[in-house]
Length: 102
Image (cartoon, rainbow, N blue to C red):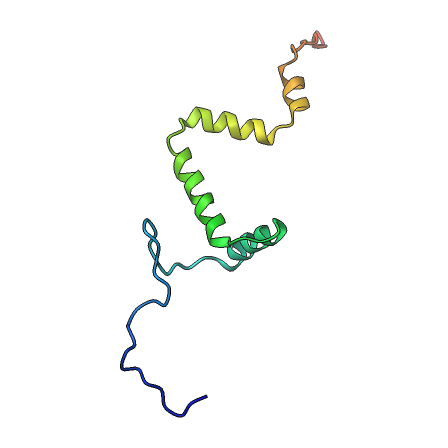
Protein backbone atom coordinates (compact mmCIF):
# COMPACT_ATOMS: atom_id res chain seq x y z
CA UNK A 1 0.00 0.00 0.00
CA UNK A 2 1.21 3.47 -0.84
CA UNK A 3 1.59 6.13 1.80
CA UNK A 4 -0.07 8.74 -0.43
CA UNK A 5 -2.59 8.43 -3.24
CA UNK A 6 -3.28 10.96 -6.00
CA UNK A 7 -7.02 11.68 -6.14
CA UNK A 8 -6.69 14.71 -8.44
CA UNK A 9 -8.29 12.84 -11.39
CA UNK A 10 -10.85 10.94 -9.29
CA UNK A 11 -14.58 11.21 -9.98
CA UNK A 12 -17.33 11.21 -7.39
CA UNK A 13 -20.18 8.75 -7.55
CA UNK A 14 -20.77 5.06 -7.97
CA UNK A 15 -17.97 2.90 -9.31
CA UNK A 16 -20.39 1.06 -11.60
CA UNK A 17 -23.01 3.07 -13.42
CA UNK A 18 -26.62 1.95 -13.11
CA UNK A 19 -27.94 0.65 -16.46
CA UNK A 20 -30.84 2.51 -18.14
CA UNK A 21 -34.24 1.53 -16.72
CA UNK A 22 -32.78 0.67 -13.31
CA UNK A 23 -32.58 2.77 -10.14
CA UNK A 24 -30.10 2.27 -7.34
CA UNK A 25 -31.85 2.36 -3.94
CA UNK A 26 -31.24 1.30 -0.38
CA UNK A 27 -33.95 -0.98 0.98
CA UNK A 28 -34.34 -2.82 4.26
CA UNK A 29 -35.35 -6.46 3.86
CA UNK A 30 -36.07 -8.86 6.72
CA UNK A 31 -33.14 -11.21 7.30
CA UNK A 32 -35.23 -14.34 6.73
CA UNK A 33 -36.61 -13.00 3.43
CA UNK A 34 -33.15 -12.16 2.12
CA UNK A 35 -31.79 -15.53 3.24
CA UNK A 36 -34.66 -17.32 1.46
CA UNK A 37 -33.87 -15.57 -1.84
CA UNK A 38 -30.16 -16.27 -1.47
CA UNK A 39 -30.90 -19.97 -0.86
CA UNK A 40 -33.17 -20.07 -3.93
CA UNK A 41 -30.37 -18.65 -6.09
CA UNK A 42 -27.87 -21.11 -4.61
CA UNK A 43 -30.26 -24.05 -5.21
CA UNK A 44 -30.73 -22.90 -8.82
CA UNK A 45 -26.98 -23.17 -9.33
CA UNK A 46 -26.13 -19.48 -9.18
CA UNK A 47 -27.42 -16.16 -10.33
CA UNK A 48 -28.38 -12.98 -8.56
CA UNK A 49 -30.83 -12.76 -5.68
CA UNK A 50 -31.63 -9.15 -6.61
CA UNK A 51 -32.79 -10.26 -10.06
CA UNK A 52 -34.93 -12.96 -8.43
CA UNK A 53 -36.46 -10.43 -6.01
CA UNK A 54 -37.17 -8.07 -8.91
CA UNK A 55 -38.95 -10.88 -10.78
CA UNK A 56 -41.02 -11.77 -7.70
CA UNK A 57 -42.06 -8.13 -7.28
CA UNK A 58 -42.90 -7.83 -10.99
CA UNK A 59 -45.03 -11.02 -10.85
CA UNK A 60 -46.91 -9.60 -7.85
CA UNK A 61 -47.35 -6.26 -9.62
CA UNK A 62 -48.70 -7.90 -12.79
CA UNK A 63 -51.15 -10.05 -10.83
CA UNK A 64 -52.75 -6.92 -9.39
CA UNK A 65 -54.66 -6.71 -12.68
CA UNK A 66 -56.15 -10.15 -12.02
CA UNK A 67 -59.71 -9.95 -10.65
CA UNK A 68 -60.14 -11.06 -7.04
CA UNK A 69 -62.30 -14.04 -8.02
CA UNK A 70 -59.64 -15.30 -10.46
CA UNK A 71 -56.96 -14.89 -7.79
CA UNK A 72 -58.98 -16.86 -5.25
CA UNK A 73 -59.71 -19.64 -7.74
CA UNK A 74 -56.03 -19.87 -8.73
CA UNK A 75 -54.87 -20.00 -5.11
CA UNK A 76 -57.47 -22.61 -4.17
CA UNK A 77 -56.47 -24.78 -7.13
CA UNK A 78 -52.85 -24.60 -5.96
CA UNK A 79 -53.65 -25.31 -2.30
CA UNK A 80 -56.44 -27.90 -2.46
CA UNK A 81 -55.27 -31.20 -3.98
CA UNK A 82 -57.21 -32.46 -6.98
CA UNK A 83 -58.55 -35.50 -5.10
CA UNK A 84 -60.01 -33.27 -2.37
CA UNK A 85 -61.78 -31.14 -4.98
CA UNK A 86 -63.18 -34.30 -6.62
CA UNK A 87 -64.53 -35.57 -3.31
CA UNK A 88 -66.06 -32.20 -2.55
CA UNK A 89 -67.72 -32.06 -5.98
CA UNK A 90 -69.30 -35.52 -5.57
CA UNK A 91 -73.04 -35.45 -4.90
CA UNK A 92 -73.93 -35.39 -1.24
CA UNK A 93 -76.39 -38.06 -0.11
CA UNK A 94 -78.41 -37.03 2.90
CA UNK A 95 -79.18 -39.72 5.39
CA UNK A 96 -82.51 -39.93 7.09
CA UNK A 97 -82.16 -38.74 10.64
CA UNK A 98 -83.21 -41.04 13.43
CA UNK A 99 -85.55 -39.08 15.60
CA UNK A 100 -87.17 -40.35 18.72
CA UNK A 101 -90.83 -39.77 18.80
CA UNK A 102 -92.14 -39.26 22.30
